[in-house]
Length: 380
Image (cartoon, rainbow, N blue to C red; front, side):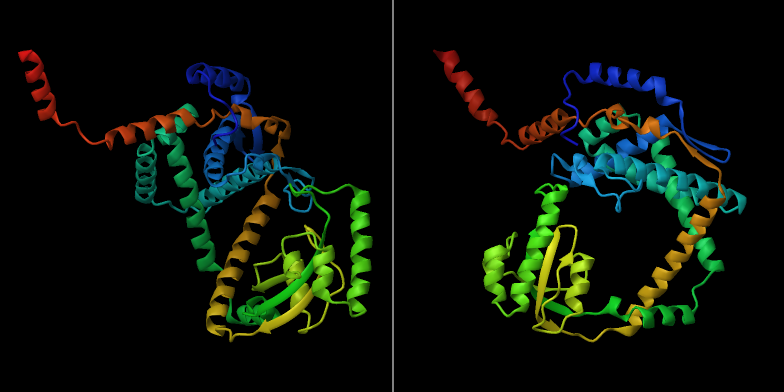
């Protein structure tokens, strides 16, 4: 949030941005049956969520990093900011579909809960002057906060209604658990690996010729390892990550600690075995499993998780069905450079608040000393 627009004369900048936005503000970004999403509504939600993400991300290049085609909403390689906008629009479309279904089913949303959420959120904003200024600059007023709180509780109302009417059966739970026991494994694996990268330091893909060269090199290294050459020495000689100095040793890890391709390949090995080259988002790996610890699984707890998972999946499928029935149109061209219509977070406001707090925390002057000094000087 401190990186995108340098504020020089906040009042003038705000006027400029809002004027630039005004030509598009009432334009329809998406239509969902008889409901509309305007450009100004989109920019407001984008401003709120982007502030939250910016507060967690410390990398100044975060928004310009690439998202691969298989990971992006659009199915194309895009920057993070572009994918973020695509995701947000899809979420807003889903919100409209949910709101319509709630109305069709005559479900009610707890107004007292909405008001309580609004009050809590407003108090949180009021306690942070810089955030409050950001909300004011971007017209994120009480009405907007109430709309956001209503959305969350509207979805919760629909999900509860659907869940009450469409309970997951014990047979479904047992079948899923039996088929996916490996998903609930508490196995602790220890492995060493040799990595030949196919991405640059910023995680962008290397040129095609370098990727092909990496594949050729990993195949040659695998032949050496399979022929019995010392794995640790090969890792020290060829490895391209921080583990190479330790002979490729990764220590112990569990499911979720490693990317799926890597973990699945390691799990399939017996202790002492070496995998064939495995491709991940980072490059090509050769893996040697060096130890494996298995712990007993709490089956009851695992099945409770399965129940929750299947119930959530059922609800998501229900929402997808509603989306497929809806008539949806989008003007994606309006998304281009939408982030520029957000008034940037004012870092000067943060500094001013910090300085004010520091000043408040300074020790108070000894007024009696000042009085004595004045009295002494008056006698001269």
